[in-house]
Length: 175
Image (cartoon, rainbow, N blue to C red; front, side, top):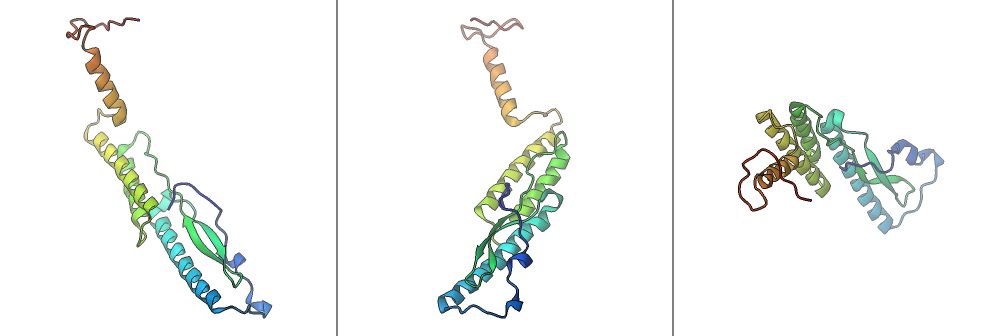
């Protein structure tokens, strides 16, 4: 599962040749072995991406597959992705927590999550945890990085040029 989309999904019915042609291509043993591998990969890819899509619900987009043509002229899915929204719900940490639970479940839905799936699950957990902090402390309305920078500035600004504590509320700025 990826967060970007690649080639648009193509219907397998359009890509598979009609059996009405009456001619079956003569395939070598290596062609037959390759066909077996392609068919297995096709099933695996479709099941993997369908798991993401089903678990992602409203946050998941349309499945996009990449194809490879087999020696029989048929296109087989060899890769795919389902785009999923990983952004926080603006101004609503509770909704963000629920959304990130769904995103994480979608990332981990396949039997064998890819490294991209694992990275997405980790990103969702980080966003979920930040939203939980916001829920626990309603005063927290800004991202952690902004809060840390503001606090560091406040500590540095609390001292004068000679590193003695300031006694006034004004900032002494020298240019």
